Image 1 (spheres, rainbow, N blue to C red):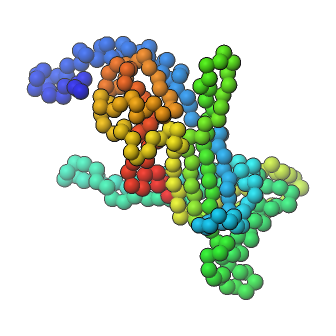
Image 2 (cartoon, rainbow, N blue to C red):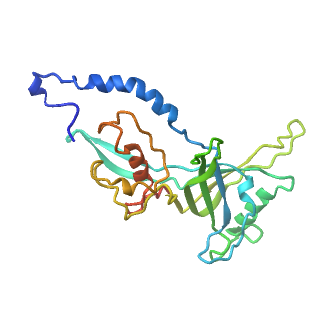
Length: 278
């Protein structure tokens, strides 16, 4: 693979030779429209969030919020951040620290019984007993877990009629949940707010992001070489977007499934602690 731009300025008397970019930009002008039209956008309203129950290693489900999947209207999952110092001596950014928020927010649909708030008040009481002003011993009933699955619809049939099917994309395993902020309960003649969500903040000990086996290929898959060395057989099982017929960036003609390769690589767990975002 050769670079399209030769950054050796001495070769051209301090100038860049961009002659080979004329055809690239010309192709880009019309390929980009087709590429973006065919690109499936993110579907942030297609998710399932449930299996809300006590964290335990056994098969028995304890302290479950039954049918949480129908009550959870919105969930906000934080992403890690990195603090970097700019080193003036080296003229380069240097890693200083990493920060994992480990705090999520869930908007619940409440009912006339105020059962969502009561569930969380009972949960709160497993930590601190207000009547006797004591902390509860042990871990029983104190932590919860949650599973969030993102999905979309795909139509891989050869029929003339569209037959979209559900394809799960990825899942978030959230463990060690503790409620840290339960909103106030307000009764108001002037404003019913009957459909207002109950927004509750939680701290957690784990947020793990993992992809479906239909998209990621597993640690043993041979997809980690350069584009020329990756066999198409390693990608045949990946059910992801695979556009073709355009000039790919930065390697060349669209005959190497490069977009499919990049997505499959992103979805394949390979490094230790990969997918840990909290």
